[in-house]
Amino acid sequence: MELENSLKKVFLDINEAQRPPAFVYQSKSWAQRERNFLFQNSWHFACLSNDIKEPGSYILKTYLDTNIITIRGSDLKIRSFINSCRHHGAPVIEKDSGKIKQITCPYHKWTYSTEGKIKKTTGYEINNKCKNEKNLDLVEIPCETRENMVFICLEKSPTLGIDQFLGNYLEKIARPHSTKDMRCVQRRKYQIKANWKLYTEVDMETLHTPFIHTESIGKQAVEGIDSEGQWMGVFHLSKETAALKPKDKHLQLPPNKDSYGEGLKGTHFCIIFPGFFVINSIDCMWWIQKIPINETETSIEVGYAFDESIIETKEFKENCEKYFERLDQVIREDDMIVQYQQKGLHNEVTGNYTDAEKNVHKFDKKIIKIILSSEFSDEKS
Image (tube, rainbow, N blue to C red; front, side):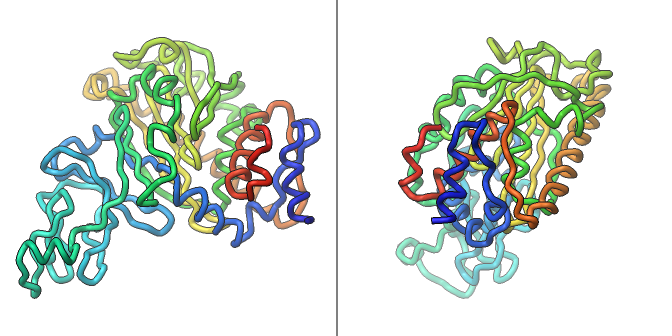
């Protein structure tokens, strides 16, 4: 009963609500429930399809301890597989990205096509019929591409299909910002010592920006977005890019060539649940993806993408470092503050919301609804 009461307070009006208690950010059992009921059955961003354009090109990423290969086959279709050989379970690919003609396990040289089909079973000579009966192909998981964005799901039969999951995200965000033309030019991975939700909460409020991002962002007025599906976001109205420091705005690149509507009027900051924070501005796109390692550690992947038509131009080559400088600085600042926040949570002090944190409140309620019983699932958001 005490547990239920502490969580129910999150669902009160924002002026009376209390933030989730500290155990939501520290408890092993709560973290396991998030993994089972939230991350396992959600669609996760894998890459941009333009980043694996050629047959045999692939991206390797880890989700909840599961290593996943996302690869374009010789038939040009993109698929995702668990990175384990069907012989002894060894990884069949080691590098984070690359291009290959076939997939060969380094242990016993079992070989698979880029479509995941078994081709060679060293020491195990059987005909094709037996291969199929024994199901020796790589283990495939759901993989879908929408507007150049590739998503995977760890659950073989997801509760929601990708279109139902994304709802109106493609219509309101991806298409106006022309994500179909984007290509990632810089990607990096690292880990932080903070619960994944702390980082996602900081993405959804600008109360901290004048203090934590004094030089990199400053004040940034935003308004909420009407969202349908498993996402939420805010919009910053300004024809200036959000990806340059205020002093560098004069170096802004041309707008994405096929953008329209709000894609030319400002920047959208969105979370595709659970932890994929993706930002689409006038002239670029970037993301900060959070996957929990455990209750107090999070794996982070950062990616910076630009319209393919601009990447090889002199203007891009001259100015891109200023974009990277600003984006890197903001991410470092957020890394710092959420890890600092995590250090204080062991004191078990429950916080409050301010009027400027309506989207944080909305995010917290959404996550808790998913994790808790149906008693909470009917609460209004």
